[in-house]
Image (cartoon, rainbow, N blue to C red):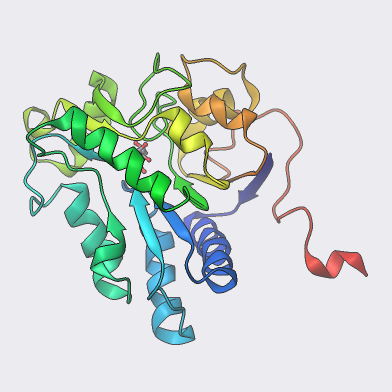
Length: 257
Ligand code: F6R
């Protein structure tokens, strides 16, 4: 696992966007796994800049999002459909037909979850999965206690997550109680994982995920099983880590010389 500690949110966002852009340039038909929430906003802003100023081309890129609330209309201000279009898709040249976000309004949610897994399979799986982390250690919306082998399914949000996300809603009551989320097992099949964290309220969760035992009580700790993980965070999120880490990717092409 590569753990990189940056000075601030801008640096995290630029490095993360650079890694994703590298994948897009190397593999123009790559499948990007995408996340929502406050953490990836800066990364998406930087990808939009690269599209506008550096011709970063998303025309053949396929995307799969991690999760969606159950019962929020797609055009609701806080739906993850809306989030993705507002923060990224409307500003780049991704084809709408290549965008996949779990349907939190499907008549048969179980069937929709199975279909999502099948569609992901048909596209050959995610090449690079962008992730945030919950203050309680959740990965996507796999809350503590989620099976580490789980697949896309309906989950109940914990009170902690609803509290955390209530900052985006007018009242706590408005925060949905249920969601549809890729499973930990689904996420673990991605070619590469890129987990971002900023702020002191993520410090405990990051320490547990990166240095703690692998346990369903901290679903994000499952990343320790994955052979290709990069975790990028700021000093506040890193404040409870105890091992030695670096501020740059540990091997750059120039290092060969
Ligand atoms: C969002 C998701 C969640 C968030 C996590 C952190 O698609 O899967 O796991 O990454 O709740 O949210 P923020 O970034 O708002 O702190």
